[in-house]
Image (cartoon, rainbow, N blue to C red):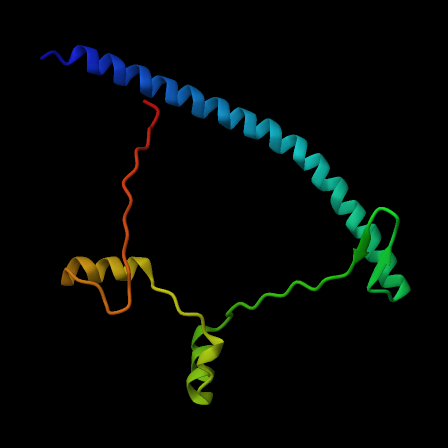
Length: 133
């Protein structure tokens, strides 16, 4: 059995894949540039409306096209891990924490023990990647 037809077929598929990936990247770049102009215009509209609402002390304003309203987006991040964890332990405020498995540590544990810690699932998905030569 000759390897030539398979290599030729694989060559063609890899070449096509790279061309398609490059074209996708070009198209995405062109699209992103167009969307950037729209995003800038949207941000200007939002700034105008927020300033208007703030100056009037209003939470919303209704128009025939729609309603503009103020919303508050919040986030919480840890600036001092030890201080935060100390507080959680001292005051038994465990609900202040989110629990998730550390993938790197779990992988090390899994390889070393050939098992997983209780209550942890592990998945690994094989996929093909193509690098330009």
